[in-house]
Length: 507
Image (cartoon, rainbow, N blue to C red):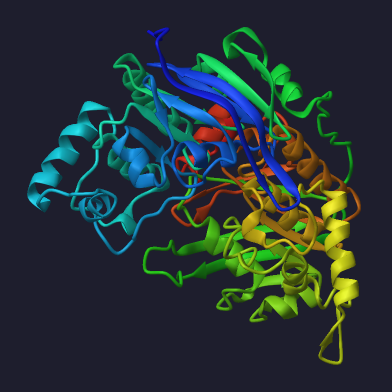
């Protein structure tokens, strides 16, 4: 049960950066043993706030009080020593090391490996997150990797556990296991500060919620007593628009994949096995699957990063499997990968420079080997305006944007180049409800204009909302695409589990 005893009180916290106020007079309290949601659209100030709590950023004003005493951590080390732990949205694990070795790297004074392995087994079994300390991290699923991060935190016996988008790469079954663990921690008195854009999860798990908008606290609620739509509208300050998917008849085939078999570039990747599908003009094909089943490899094969596809990939009947990304972009085949920072965007380059990286050819941003900085800046500004990217301007480095705002920029950069074929992986990962709806509408509008769109996503609701047909990726194999009309979650579950060769329509 949630107690009434305050664990952490935040009073008037403020933080500003050049051109933007990230947090403005933020005040709220977290009670011992409660699960407290921190909600807000992208750029609302959530990340800056938790970084101040965890000692990564120092506030400009205000104070924090932890267990009745002033709390001002100068570093994450100081935060951990005070009983504050954090599980980040992006994992910080070494694939070539085993579980115990990765856990040891995150500890101040790790015990001997044999003793640590025993503790990992004990704690992981106690909290329903079983882990083998000897397994290589590179062989683990996304859900198992998150367990490593959580167990590393739990070994520190935290009083406050901060979780940033913890379910973004988990299956529904893994989400249930995680929630059981968090409820057990809560019952034992651990407070949890929970950040997520999945509002139905917030309603199921969280005791109270604090809502930020443009750096300020704009509302508080008990999630179980309001609807997900109510919370979303509190976050954005306006009515939420639901994407409209008009009836239409697809045009001729644009992208065809026939018997694609391809080994991964990474030793921890997934081999694609005999994949076949066709996407027509004006159609959205949704591809679902649990993380680590070949999504990255499929996007690489379609984008041209992996060139071994040979005759298996064709555009309007012309084989393009041996062409690289630049040549395919010249043919209007564009893509946006899942990993936005480092793959879709260069972290230390400005938004203008990141626009040039993929749009130089299609948008005429270069002439005879010379870049047109004026045109490049104008194109970046166009993306920022069209997709409501919250940033001071196109000169800001990509790494300075919140994850959701960078995602909007990456997706907008590709859509505004008017592709004939667009392949996107996790298009709304880490994006707030309003921005997710805008991105989905932009994808639908692109298809309505005659493009063939392939959306790879772990968000099944998203795929059912925008896709004309659905296929499931499992261990590098793709099920036969089926119309989304009338498709049930039971049938989808069978497809995700690898039931590719059975007639699931009769289940």
